[in-house]
Amino acid sequence: MNYIVFDLEWNQAPGGRYRENPKIPFEILEIGAVKLNHRRKVVGKFHETIKPLIYRSMNRYTQAVVHMDMEKLNKSRTFSPVVRSFLEWCGKNPVFVSWGPSDLFELQRNMEYYHIPYQFPRPLLYYDLQKLYSLGYLDGKKRPALSEVVEAMGIPQEGQFHAAFEDAWYTAEIMRRMNIKPLLNYKSVDYYHLPQNHGEEISLDFKTYTKFVSQLYPDKETALKEPTVTALSCNRCRAKVTPRIEWFSGSGGNMYYALCDCPKHGPVKGKIRIRKGPGEEIYIVKTIKAAGESDVDEIIARKDAAKERRQKRVEKEKARRKAAKKAEGVPKKTVKTRSSGRRSRYRGTRKKTAAGSAEQTAT
Ligand SMILES: [Zn+2]
Image (cartoon, rainbow, N blue to C red; front, top):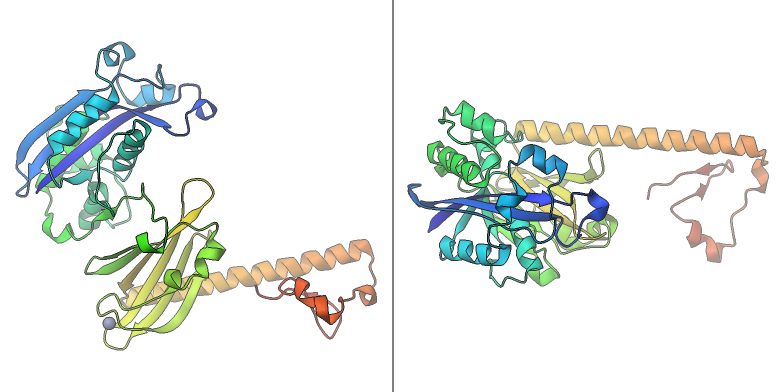
């Protein structure tokens, strides 16, 4: 087994987003990589620039960061032969390592565009070293720039940043100097190929937590009705858990939280992240972890905040309706419900109360 620590540089449409080819918004122009064996000793290097075929001039934002000139790139080979050489150089069962989550995604998108046949395993797991560094040395949430970490670790700065080989080399140097063993559990899932049906859904056990990646759904409401999406079980023993706080949405509406108890292992927390798939569809990533005391407090606080937000919304809506009614001058008595047979059409939006005023019901 070898680690392939790699980095890509790419260009985007020089005329801005409306000029881009949606099938390949980022065209790869350079691949740099360092091969480390299981002891993290350097056993190989790869570097090649690529002749662009889609965007023939540099996007000005790209140009400002990436130091490449078209004249030199035009003397390079095109993507297809370069990526074939790269994948051959990677060898069998490579374990990819990158700084951040986007390189492996863009590599596959470029490969698909050029119909390069290569069977990546599914699910494709890799190491996002930026995340591992944060988990091991920072708060686990920050995502530091490569240059910051190179500086913090005292790695000699020989090459420039934002050049594929140099960045791959720095990333490999960081990996070599890190206390990596306790972090090797934390593999990332690549989301380029998303599950297309229930059979392809991904369930992974990372010892300290479990992760589930759903199939695509038209919207989050549909997804959250699906039992496989909302199911909770203990991440350690898989036992059925007793819910303490049912799924509720955090601020922003793209995160959902739940808290439950395993009879054997105590509190367990669930988190659902709604993620945008290709097009309009969404998919969900659910993680289940043991919850410490502070986690329990945090979820309770979030729940309280969510309740408060909902109450405020309801009050605001009430006030708005009241004001609208006043402005229209509609006498209360004329607000009528339909005959009982057609009532269901209005259920969930308005409910008549004894006083005759409309009140919002929970949906
Ligand atoms: Zn358990």
